[in-house]
Length: 518
Image 1 (cartoon, one colour):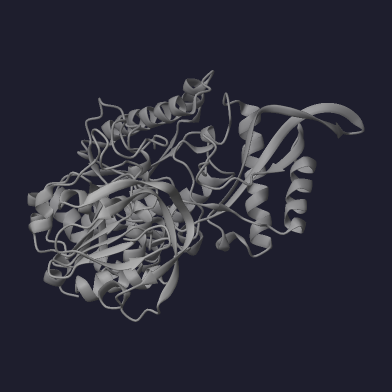
Image 2 (cartoon, helix red, strand yellow):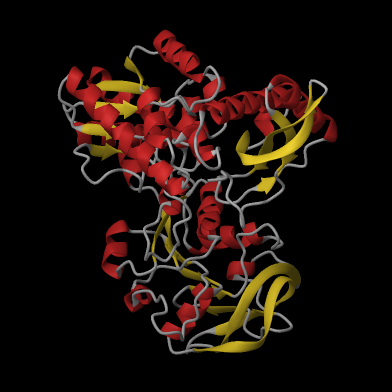
């Protein structure tokens, strides 16, 4: 693919009104090999014109259009001549902006609902008369704006889908992006390909070429320090940047004493043996653990680790010479989960490499993976030739085991968490399950339970196992692991790790829980 083709790739813009499904919409579109980007709901029409998207999607959201300070988009976007699709609240926002009426329903419609299709062109091209869709709303469009007509309805929602054929503006009261909606993917495909006329050119090969070119232009002859953790994100970041600027990149691997078992030695060996890039190993475990002493709040742990990381980078950088850039493996979900207070998306947790960075930091940030999801990063890593044990490695939090330890971080709990997590991963690999799950680890807190150790009754720690499946980390389900695997994990943990008496299994999904405990 030529550079001019890369720069003009078709894209769909998603305006985020706060739906838990916003990222799922983006993921669905990227699965079609079409670029999708998420913007705040109030992005100006002028900025959208400069981006030149082929289509705009208005996400769902928890608000009501008639509430005071309800999130509303720039009215001018409806005059741009760009196809628009509103989903749930997005449909209501369209109706409200264009002179229609939105009302509170007498009965909330939530869950699977039969949709009756009236018009099988446009969004429903190739469909039968009825499908099952996923509804989640109390408000509904009561009166359509001028120029719109109904193209589908349900028993409790007379205007379940609307269309302005001339302006190519559409609204759906249901969620096509979720798996519960039959042929929801086909609805989105009809919008993206038939109505927006996008071409499937969002491929990771072109991403690599474009990103390497952008790094060269942005960095020039300046020098970059890369925070290398050994995970797929930071490793891919390092290789991409090295491909762009060569010897002007220096990687620093910081051992904060909160890594997986034997991880520091494995990562250093992998990169020194396989890549001709500068790698500095900094053992800073004592200073990290000293600063975490007595700290029980998870947000405080994340901020301490983020700040200490930057201190180590700054100190090491001064020893090596002058560096202008700090490179990190920040991903799209990291950014949204670290949303600042006051934004439409509430902050779930601070990622140490996003909102956890200290204000005094002098580096310019270089984050080449900021717009990618985890599965896309794995594709890039594979194309770049990274070892499979890195490509397939499970996500690991930047603050390390400190956020898998509930309460104060102590040497005993670090050892328990590290050894137990190793046993979990080892047993999953033996069973051929490791590569089939998103993340698997052990966590430990201060709770203890009675057990029998060496024929003596005593209190010991409770270890909780967490194994989840997910597409991108934004949502996750707990894995229904066979009992025999769980039994082996439990037996090994209680037999091999001192002062552990009980093993439990976490069966909470995200939402309402998060994947990591802290």
